[in-house]
Length: 150
Image (tube, rainbow, N blue to C red; front, side, top):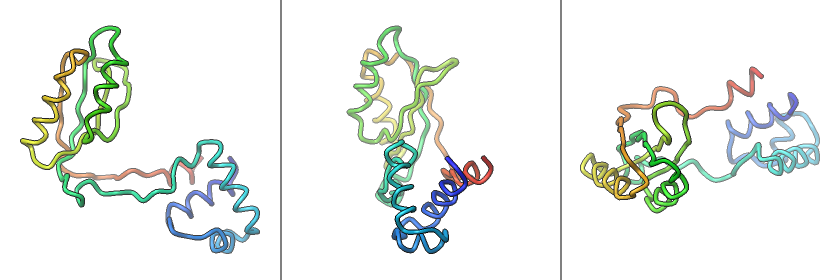
């Protein structure tokens, strides 16, 4: 990835609805160059999607929590499959240290969050959970500083 790729990604993040022609104008390069770069970045997995970022809070899930899981030895795949069935689990990451998985979960209310945790614990592959409710987002997901300072 070179400086043009980084500038292209930063511009696309700042203006998610920008067309290729306008993107080329802003970057000062040919439209074909922009199209080829976008295709290369997409094929290489750098650009993962073009969908809108949806606010869980704005669609009825104002509670966000991080749920750490301890998994029974040798049952990681089983646990992950069980977690896939819970729609309120937005992400699951494998971790090192005391816990095995970290889940980002959303809920309608704290009672609803308790039900979700009970659903998670219903899997025999999950031994224990540790939940932290997020009170606010101080720095939302960002990639621009990383691209600008690479």
